[in-house]
Length: 388
Ligand code: NZQ
Ligand code: ZN
Image (cartoon, rainbow, N blue to C red; front, side):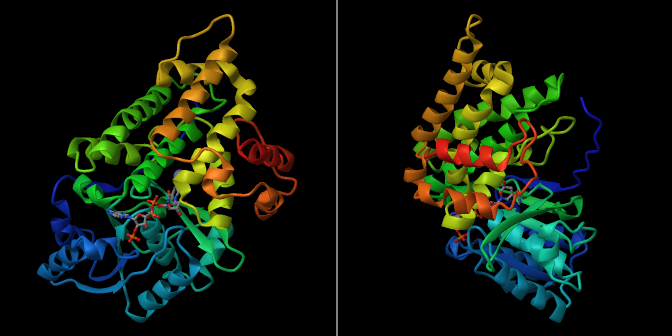
């Protein structure tokens, strides 16, 4: 196991109706002038936004609001949010929504304390400080409610890039599984795919003897595989929603990734897809992951065979572990199809003729991508081709 630091200070407020306590939590974490940030309207329609405002008002906390975050959040609204924060002396940002709203909030939180262009942090500048961000999560997926990350698409060139820092971990996150009951099945499935991907980016590692995190990863995957079909069959199944919600958090706050090298090449390849086609991140991952697996499998066939046996219940073929490994990848693809996810370019609306553009916008140059297998531009092109 590698040396590591793990600092995950987010306070989680989990369960039914907990959003009604948001005012007291904002106060407890020092917020006095709050920007409420939200998306395209689901929180207005569900009445959640009103409940949040009532709770803040009950604590006499000043607030202003900024809605309109799009899935795959854009830079334009971030600039607007930063301006509001500076003009109104905002000291706390409350994200009410999914990963896109949370990531946009984190970007605003960075920019509000910075004189330059917030985009600098998405091009590699070290993040040192940000306004405190809290979240009320409405979709189990990206894990941004407990993660260090924020992913934004810059409208100039539609570049989708990430910033990462412990300073971006939310100070508190309200997780009420009931709030996810209004999700369309497609979004529930995209979310499940994303959290599985967060685990697999960590699972396929070259680090030896990481049994504890292997087992945590497998536990999360098994849970998502068991509970997602139940939530799809009955969107109001609270227990399934609850298990999925916590799975999404532990899949990405890094508790299952510490002490091991992590890959993340599939995420980068997906970000190019959602940058170009504006597709849901989870759906893009469902297309990229099987292609990546097939391409890198022989680098460590026993790890893929372990994945097949422990996660998908395949029988180990000791004569030919490769066969077992392939079975595992096939089972993963079948599961994706069964929950309504695309697994090929055409099902996603992506085109083979755009592959050179996808590779070019990644701006890899002479660098390599990922860690399990270090991919060159040529490897990346071949993986996209395998996904066609
Ligand atoms: O905008 P509204 O109207 O709220 O609708 C949203 C949106 O259309 C809808 N939705 C959310 N909660 C709902 C609901 N509809 C009905 N009922 C509810 N309760 O769902 C749609 C998708 O929302 P979005 O926030 O985009 O989904 P998600 O949480 O999957 O976030 C995706 C973004 O997160 C990034 C992705 O790249 C993508 O941009 N990621 C962020 C990460 C991080 N910060 O750590 C890591 C991830 O790997 C990922 O890259
Ligand atoms: Zn993801």
